[in-house]
Length: 224
Image 1: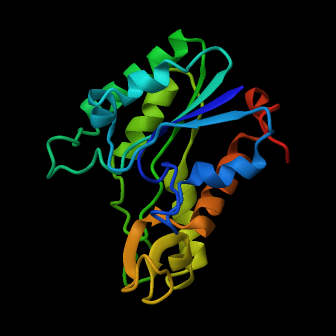
Image 2: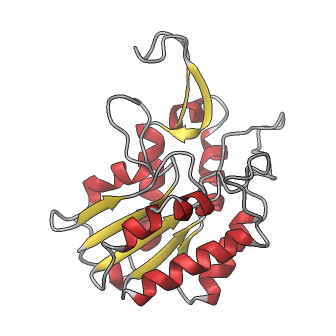
């Protein structure tokens, strides 16, 4: 059994060189059965366009077969309209690229699941999150899932609700947003409201688990 991850930095595996940054599949590992092989092809800064143009999708596809569940999560970098190398429009290339990935994985016999992008921690003065975050991209991914008759996890909505419930200050613990002199590699601190620390990765992994635990395809994947 293989769990294959394709995505960006919120999914990417991190080691001690980028600690305390963590991709959420790293927190999911503790919930997986020992027979599951987690293969994480996600990479920092990638959009659907660059993931394919750099050959990363083809690399992942080589390991994809009927014994695979494929998780695909993009959107953070696709929306960078200031960078033509990564940008894809939510009503154009973004859903087209997702549709291509889904169909190619299904040709291999894999079970494919789409994950809408995790919400950014961008609070407004009233204590709610900026409603424009990932506007159009969430909806485009869900439409691709429906057209291909595959499941999806709406991280955009789920994480927005969780972050708002947690609150402005406490939700910093989910992200790479911390004061100076806490982590040796970041002596001046950091104000990153996109990338996750372990608490945030665990939060997302828990949301994922709760979303898919009743799906028969995942029955043998979890040990909880």
